[in-house]
Amino acid sequence: MRYARWVADAVRDDLRSCAADHLGTDGAVLIVDETGFVKKSHASAGVQRRYTGIAGRVENSQVGVFPAPAAERGRALIDRRLYLPQHSWCTDPERRQQAGIPEAAQFATKPRLAGETITAALDAGITASRVTGDEAYGQDPHLRPTLEERGIGYVLAVACSTRVRIDQGRTVIRADVLAHRLPAPAWQPHSAG
Image (cartoon, rainbow, N blue to C red; front, side, top):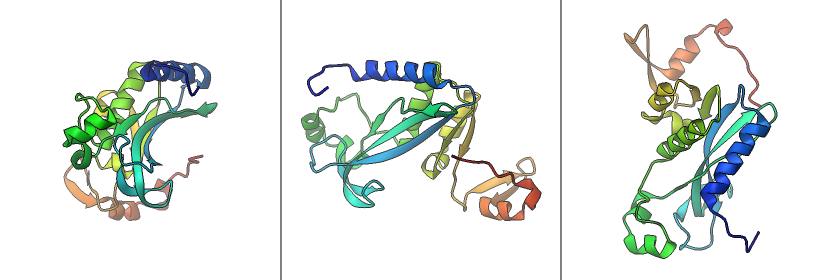
């Protein structure tokens, strides 16, 4: 594989198709999340010092956003988007050129990158009953409407301080306060494994 030449997007498309065929996507959940890759070099595209969960500390790292359908038969990473930090990379043409980043690549938030991968997966025939992601995605005001336009449900984490509307939008209340006010029978435990 070290000397093989391939077109990364074509490999991604084949993998996505294979995942849909072999996993079966009926009732699948499409999970979006980012992960960091520790890098020793400052020249790799998108590298900067930041906290990364992989290392459990601040390190030089790249960050990628990944979607993965999870179904009864398994799960697979089916796409990727490299996160380019706005100030340390997107506004430095010399650094971009040295790392081989095309001019067309512009800054995008992680939720926007997630939205792009979700749209690409759905357009490619991946079916999912819902999308799930952590607070980084749940706090974004654009991702939820994108999912609603596609008619796909979602479970996205939000901060406990997020203000939500109840009573047909007449009342605004913090999410944590609302959760504590719900009676015990309103909750249903579900396995996330």
